[in-house]
Length: 273
Length: 273
DNA sequence: TTGCTCCTCACGTCACGTGAGGTGGC
DNA sequence: TTGCTCCTCACGTCACGTGAGGTGGC
Image (tube, rainbow over the protein chains, first blue to last red):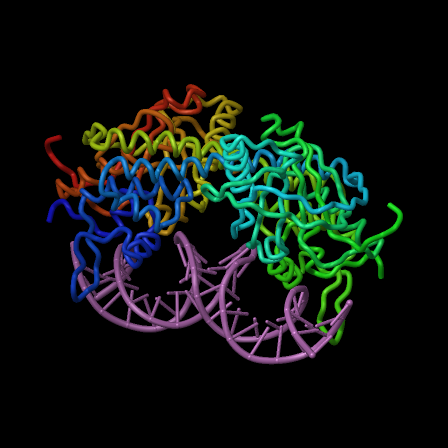
């Protein structure tokens, strides 16, 4: 058995701890080449070293064990590099989010008291083309961009012009449970044919307190905070879904710093604004 | 109570889920301004919104809850920005590691069979200046750089010249338990005064199988794999600590691609190499 | 023979999420 | 009054780590 290693030697060979190797055996990610039936001693083959190194690299990239298993079991190189590419893409987007969070943290700490401007608005019902789905809050931004892209493209294909800025209607669960129903819409007067995820929808009218947020959506939480504070202090809150209006958004410019987003919080009908 | 919010409204105000808010209450990170003694209903003040936003940002940056608590409780702005800076530094180093892991993964997948050159060597005992500590494997590289820096600086201050490249002796636990004793040394013939962590040490002689690794230490695992494979296939392994020799390292150049590291695995005395 | 290596098993950790079962507030 | 909001409690998840208690191999 000259080319088989004890778990200790395999640990030194692969730079993974013995506990980790036993864990990977338990979950079937890295099975020893042989297990002594009465001592239980594991034996790894030298041929398993490269696979173990790959596993270690994926773990350094925080790929979940299940996905690593899928990569190792991938039938062909194409499927494999697809999975890897997907993960690297996710990593990259996380990286961008981290960079945005660092910038935004500095701003939060240096300018703590900044509040967004708030106004009251009576929003009439409006016909629109809409896409609705149940989404996780962490995927919400990506989903929003995808859905907006589809909406504008389909309206264009149907020769329909938007009659106002795009908007979104977000169920309370999306905030309180981190998962819930979301609807994005583009108002349009025309007759919509349902293609893809697209559906016609009459967005109901509401009375809103509206906060305006300038800049990237990653930092929109400050405007949410301002708005919630305003509504609480004036005791205006009623049940209903939060709205957002993308006054200047992806469709207008790719420079996120120039985006303008309105957030609408449902309130009592008030006579004066 | 116009400026107090239910947990649901506070959730919408801060973009954190209700489960998360309850968790933060439980662990004392974010205590509601008031809790109804008989219904248990939580009430948050509008003044808690900024703190909650800060917590959320830190969590986006993966700061542990205990550290966030420490930041929020920091007595002065200096202590606070110290903690934040420390964390951002850690993040940055993780980012570098991630980038290195991506590069290294590509290489692993594209060039699977590459083995490092291996030779046998009889290493005589040698007097040296050394630093020894118990380290976690994840901190090992940083610790190594710090210790090497101290060693070279202290020898220089004492007017002693190194008589060979720096090296390290690593206990098996460091690999198998991910934590163990590590010693870095710089061989020198002179009379060492113990300053700081520095101690004189006679590094014992050994018989080694040696693999040579060219490039950054993040990718040294491939050479470990080659070496372990070689030792297993020739049934040469004996108990003893792994050694590394930093033939070209930090002390020689800051260009990590040009580093050359030898790894020594203890083996039986053999007559022929 | 000694001491190290290896084993299992149960439980812990971290930051929440899940889901059952129930109550409170508008 | 209805239905939503809110509550607790116990358990689950992910990827291991800890530690007790014990055995195997050179």
